[in-house]
Length: 408
Image (cartoon, rainbow, N blue to C red; front, side, top):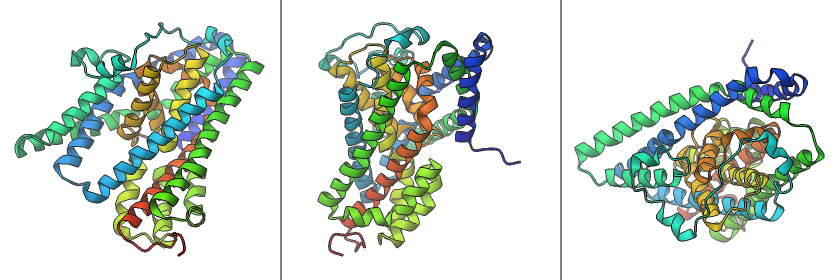
């Protein structure tokens, strides 16, 4: 009998855990340890994964000049649209405030130390670490880790050939090692998530407050994704590339439907390549480079979702995030979405990066996991559609004749 896909295993684990925690609350301490170990394992890999991923990526891009003109255009697009998605999520979570009024949940959530208020200037200054090795062990110093990784990656490309190739090979191997470890941990996630959700369910009742709060949280994520999918990306297509959004929507119908049903950018990739080449008229030279890169780097929907989750959890704790803390969230989400997007179930890993950056406990994700499946389908759809937008925009900028251009 074929083993069900990981996301179905997780969904089954969540459903069983909800019933187990509600019916047998006295037995949850015997399974809660699985959630604790899983969270500790995620925290263990965050720093080495981000460090190796960013150093390897920057060093490879710069030393081999593998990106070239197409790569620079693609990375410019990915960073711009991810930032726009993140700012959309940030605005909505501040306006809708889905976590407001849920303080009655605090009894079942891990306590957190008071978050230190920092001015914007202090936030910028503290990005530069004074002690690198101490930074690796500080929970809220993730931006410093990212800063050092980017700096190291850039200056590896300035070394002599022998040293450059040695260090680039080392960090490529280190990143591959971290991916193997991460994949192993993620394969155990159904057990960890079972422990987390069962423990949470044993201490919660399905109160009107909780149901309303989760409903507002889902609405915030869905609305943000809809704005990005229906307004932001079409506007970029129309005004930047002279692309007809309606023609592009029609041409990309199959990849969008496939992404929604599979919740996987990589599984959708063959369909996406076929659609942009046959329906939109993009050359294989462009689609064969931009789309595989986008499937692992461009995560607009995921970055927006993670910002809303962090804001939602902070509001439950009654924390009004300062401008400096929100800036950290935005910058960390932007860099993390690029740095660890290739990891299976990468949203759990990148969420741990964002939570660490602002001092929120990762255990609280158990609160939103029961409603995560439909949101996962929606954010993958946005990720894939954004990849197709990048491809036609870059093809247009290269002078290719497209079927989706205005007036064509």
